Amino acid sequence: MYREKLTQYIDNKQSEMLKNLADFIQIPSISENKNQVSEALNYALNLGKSLGFKVSLVLDGQVGVIEMGGGQETLGILSHVDVVAPGDMDKWMTPLLRLLSNRAISMEEAPLMIRGPSLLLYMP
Image (cartoon, rainbow, N blue to C red):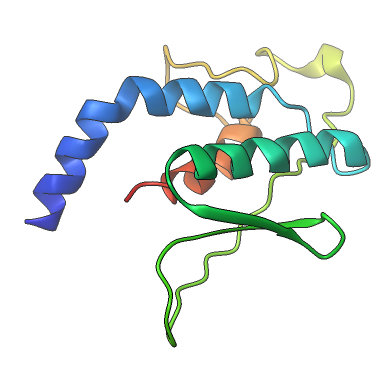
């Protein structure tokens, strides 16, 4: 039953989810650049808030918390929004920081591999 509901939800929200993911991937958020990382973290928090989750920043704005519900027991899922520097841009075979949906995912699309699962956590 839950699998059918999840499949239906994904089918209904696929375009929206892909747009959110594409927007998220376009934020460079290279680890050494605190402003970029902050922008990506704020994007994730704002998205969570728009989907009805409670959001907050902790540890001097370095960590975002997105939660729902409450009580004695909670589920925590750790993710991050920063990426390593791409190095020599001339050596890349595909554009960086773009969602390429016309083929299979490659290792060159590291932001997708890092950020994609993070956005799936927002599904009710």
